[in-house]
Amino acid sequence: MRTMVVLRGAPGSGKSTWVEKWGLKPYTLCADTIRELIESPVMDDERGIMQISQKNDKEVWGLLFHLLEQRMVRGELCVVDATHCRPKDFSKYKYLIEKYRYRCYCITFDDIPIEICKAQNRQRPEFKWVPENVIDTMYARMKAFPVPNYFKCISHFDDDAINSIVNEYKPFDANAYQKVVVFGDIHGCWEPMKQYFDENPFDESNLYIFTGDYVDRGIQNREVVEWFLKNYDRKNVILLEGNHERWLTEYANEEYDDDIRNGVQNVCKSPEFFNNTIPQLEGLSKKELRQFCRRFRALAFIEYDGKKYLISHAGVGFMPDNLVKIKAQTMIRGNGKYEDDVDGWFERHELQRNPDLIQIHAHRNTTDIPMKASKNSYNLCDTVEFGGNLRILEIFKD
Image (tube, rainbow, N blue to C red):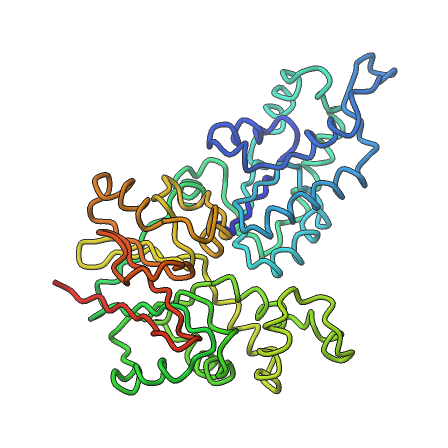
């Protein structure tokens, strides 16, 4: 879930063993594995052994970063197994981290004594042996070049910290708030949103959660966005990401500027956003819009008055065992078909298994499903942009 973990250590330090220990192999891209895919082991005449070729680094890292970005587009948990002993090994990630809004960690193995590392290197299959002078060089580099500060460093010995990154997604304790208010799709419709706050003035003692799709289709996109620009950074406001936020984020990042100047839609994949929403947002600060978009989350998982609430834009059919390993795209766009009965499936799978768990979502409602869509799932999707309701769920204690 938009988390990147890179491993730092010389060959033989235990990185691959660590990946197996934590069950992260399906989420890991390994530079050596890609080297083996590009070229089978070659003869090392001097050492008299077969070995993995180190001569294809441009192709290896080009392919690794291509695959990595494909995973980051979907908001996956990403682990990169490589030595990462030079500054340039980290600088390659910075652009992707900022573009896809990832939290980043570096698991360090440089505290493994060098003699142990060399001994473990010799125990690996022969074609994976690395010359000991190369290991010496890597240790010297790791000592000379610290990990950049946009990665949080964690020792591979720190099981508690690692578990909190790759296994635990603890619910946020919302019990300090008087009530929790969850808004469905707004779709550029300011009047119903304004009506709610006119009748129920914004209160710091309440927690407000917005499920996404703030823009498009409506005729008051500017008014909606202006309200969020004034309020998005409040501590009691949680902004979830809907599928329509893709266009707003790309617009804020100035990816459409050439198209707008030329009057030709080449980059933006949404005619609705390009032709109707952008003209309504004209003049708003792109910098402020970027700051707003950086606050988007894929989901909210809260605990309130003895119950847990899984809140997302698209909704899911069951509660995953590990939310960290779920793609952000799953919560934003959903799995399967748009018309899938995730509310019914959630009741079938979770009502008995997790009786104190409730789902709240928006995004999909093709059959006029009521707000209380099943015994344990609320559907906040309505046709507000076509004269329907803006669905708002208020959760009180007791």
